[in-house]
Image (cartoon, rainbow, N blue to C red; front, side):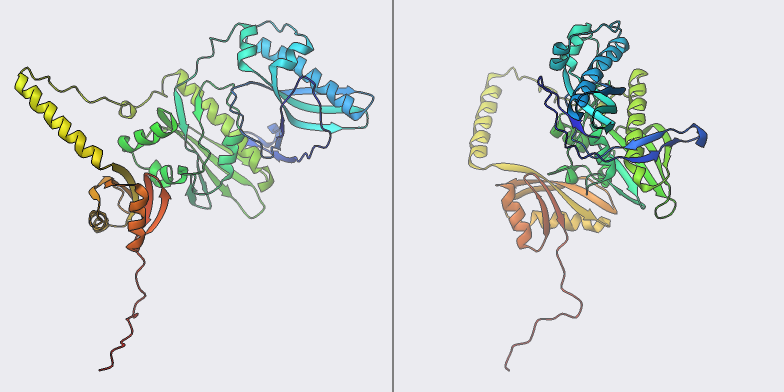
Length: 427
């Protein structure tokens, strides 16, 4: 679904590459006769402006040229969209001048359009600046939103689950979703950089609050939302069924579950877009009735203050010890590095810890998150730059991925069976 930013001049380019494929979305339990066609949306950039969105604005106008007709259609969509938004927010639906609307509209969404030589027929969406529209309607302070929620979209397709390990259609759907009308404050990672290491299929199954709290601190969020979809294809080129689950928190609690269906794979974007909207409605309902409360284990608890000694000599001794510790820290920089490693069995844990402790400069190597049969996490205290630890691991045959304070290691490659060094001895 193309999104165009408006300007005061409204200079419109007529060379628009528009693609739309028909699809029918069925909610579970609906009769086929009750369905309505839905256009699947092409990829568009994520809108993080928090704008008010008014969709489904129908226009049918004429003009001397195709450009003039489209110009008039967009102007008419702004007026009709403002009336719909004003009525929705209790403003009475009063009109504004075109000049005022030009400065308030932040984008036009083309849902469907037909352009003729002197006629323009379209269904459009209008994005209004939340700050400007709210100040005019007197609702700027009424739109209370939730605390920041980290979105970890999980997709199962062909029996394989993935989050950010590679690009997915489910991730695209959450990127297209505009959050301006939602009371939930979504924090949506881009899926690049360390995202695939920090948030993967194995991490979703770990209830440990300490590691989740560390991840939330990285993204400025205080809670986790895990929207899940399982895609089933009945036969190649045939219907696609999506089973959606709105989950919340490190314990993966279920908020809502529903099923949608399209007749073929061309309607998959429309299926997922409809699923995201239903998920948002479920999360907003959970926020209103108190089911979206934050787990106490995810909140940071400051350490309790130590008892202040009353003896002056004890204070002097403590000051001297602190000074010595400060001097020792000044000479050596210790880095805390998170190392992810495979643990097919209990023996793999001790083996990996022993291998890390054998590297010069490693002070501590303790497993902080254990997942037998999966990927565990070890916290390593290292005197020096994390890049030096990565180089030392590679020198010992380990495969190392990642950079900075988050590394992913795999076991050293072993020589193939029967491979023995050549005997070059002459006697």
